[in-house]
Amino acid sequence: MAAHFGRRLRKGAVTTAVAAAAVAALSASQAPDVTTSDGQERQSAADAQATPDPTAADAGATGNSPYYTDLPPLNSPTPVPSTTVGPTTGTGTSQAGIPATVLDAYQRAAAELTASKPGCNLPWQLLAAIGQVESGQARGGRVTADGTTVSPILGPVLNGVGFAHIKDTDHGAYDGDATYDRAIGPLQFIPSTWAWAGRDGNGDGKADPNNVYDAALAAGHYLCRNGWDLSVEADLKKAILSYNYSQDYLHTVRSWMEFYRRGTHEIPDGSGSLPGNRSDEHDTPMSPSVPVTPSPTPKPSKPGGTTKPSTPATPSKPGAPSTPSTPTPTPTPTPTPTDTVAHLEDAGTATLSARAGDTFADRISARAETASGKPVAKVRIRFTIVGDTDAAFAGGESHATVVTDAKGVALAPALRAGEKTGDFTVRALLVGRAVTAVDYRATVTARAADALIRTGDAALTCTAGGEFADRVEVKATYKGAAAGKVAATATLLASAEATTANDKGPYFKDASGKPVRTLTGLETDAKGRLKLPELYADDTTGTFVLRVTTTGGATLTVELTVTAPASSTPTPSDGPSPSQSPAASESPSA
Image 1 (cartoon, one colour):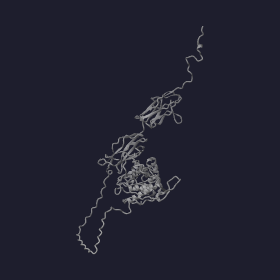
Image 2 (image 1 turned 180 degrees about the vertical axis):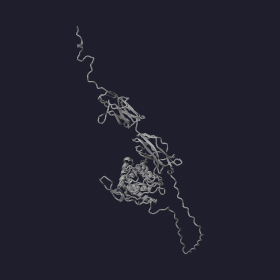
Image 3 (image 1 turned 120 degrees about the horizontal axis):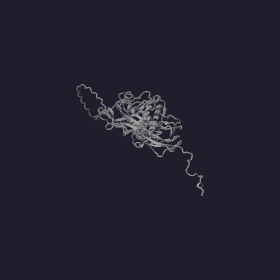
Image 4 (image 1 turned 30 degrees about the vertical axis):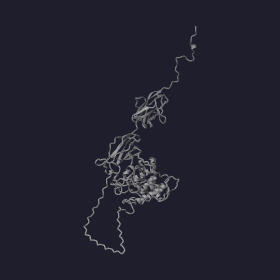
């Protein structure tokens, strides 16, 4: 790689001014894509507290590692109209070309975020701009067919000398350094950030920071956190600064984003050129400035005057041998609050259990402590949901970062159960330092009802061989509230004491029209109501029972009556027949 990470001198005001000019020039030519701030601050639904604005103290996604400072040309490429479906094409400078696999990764990530977080309004050009600034589009597109870089892309050692001070958090698994962290991959994530932000973008079952599909999707989710709307100027600035806190970085990324918005084209993988300038190098080595006292200018002698002879200098006495100077020790960096954390503790979380679809009654809390047990305030704890579950924190996020309070406690956002039942884990990790995680076990149980009632009161009767006029409808409740989406079973029995389905009497019909006397897989609607299918009767008469049960043990028994059909033979009458008249029955008078 052409860049030298060893030098740490940053470009200054010239870079900022040029970048600002580039952004202004490109923005002036933009359509309404570039919007201004609406002045509205947004808070992440996944955070229990308001997330502070990015500051220089935040490590960001990259640990504030160096980046490429080259700017795009002010003359943006002009898009070429195309009627074919495929990658965007265009003409213009070579800087507008993006390697095919890398371009596809950015566009796929933006499409996924459009579906999952439409309110973020993430443009793929922002991902392309960050990719250009962080790694020169994965070193000019030197990636394999699945998007993995041919060789690792590593930033400098983050040992606090010229860069952030981030001790090892991944045991060297990603960056090969077990002492300090380094930014990794085409989007330059530090391991501690990747631990929660990493995503599987290419569907191979793993999240790899060296894969451009995975890294692009992770960067998209990173930029879309905190409820930011990237079509709003204020939120866009916050998102970019949270990635790498530098005004120079902000201007450089913005200039590339606007440049790519004007048009770009696909180039073959591996054919891109690597930028030549980085923020940690300078053409001329710079040193701290030392004020120089100018030499006094001798006064001109007066015309015709005489110049006094100079007084001979008094010879100096032989000096004593110089004492070797003691080297000044390098000052020890002041430990940050994160550096003082020795372990995390459960801060009294109760048993975590909830029915599917409900919010867990208790919230998870963790406490950061020093080795002596003292609480540590103002450190970040990341809560991550782990396991096969669709449970999520408020807002649908699978992770949330919370800053510890004065007691060293971080309270996670409310946790909501999904529809998948079973156990899963919520893991609490310290951001910025490797300490043992705290795991919390959570359980999701099936939706349940504790009571069932029939919604109507009409008698359920039918003649043998016929069909019941009314369908049975019930309502399920749980602790007095409607119990929606609760599983139920309906069984036809010979009597209330019977435990198995009857083999005669009333019946339902299956899809093929055959009689069935047990229905499973039933479910109440959102209002807790369940309407059973039509009921039919065979030739058996008598009284039968319909029993409905739900998950949770709610039971309802309904009586069904099947009567014999009416007889078609007239019943004899005790009265006179219609043909007989009263006069005919009387005896003649004597």
